Structures are given as structure tokens and as C-alpha cells.
Length: 134
Image (cartoon, rainbow, N blue to C red; front, top):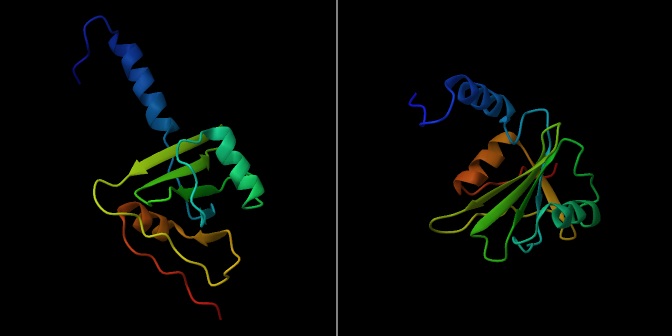
């Protein structure tokens, strides 16, 4: 690794190690992921999105789940995630095309729960299908 002039190698290594340890997956098999079905204004920050989670979805933002939201055009998404030490917002905008927002079997639903694989597909822009109700 090339160390920039004036930066101590040990300090840089310690910072990089801390960053690597702090990065956790957005979704794990143990955590739930909820996709909000109503579009939001993607200019909103932490407090407003936490309010959406509580008011629209009826959930607590710091319970360990991830919450996915889309803008009106579905060309971008924000994911609110609690990693155990604080809240994180992940923002992704498609270079081309739009995200394929899942639909619900319940016409009154405000969100749907998806699994880890569905989240990965959603992030890649792949159409996801929810399992049918039995």
C-alpha cells in the first residue's frame, strides 16, 4: 500500500482496520428487510426516514431490520439499516433503468418483507417475486 506524504503508516493501517471492521452486511439471514411500497422523497435524511418507518410501517428503526425505500421514478433507493451501534443510510441510483419494486398480495399493505437473496437481486435491478400465499 502506498502511504500519502505526511501520513503515518501505523495510523493509516489502524484507520483502515477500523473501517473494515465497521462495515457489516446490510442484510443477514437473521435480520428482516422490509420494502416500503409507497415512494418517498429521497432528499429526506435520517429523522424523516425514521418517522416513515414508525408511522407508515409501524416498526422501530433500531430493531435490527433494514428498510428499503424508493423515489417516485424508482431510479434510486435508500436503505435505512441499524448495525448495532448506529443507523446507516445506503443510497443507490441506477445508471440505466429502474428498480423493480415488489408488489404485495394485500392491496392495503404498506411494506413487504424480503429475504437476503431478494435484497441482493433488488440491488442488482433484477425482478423479484414474492412467494405466493398458501
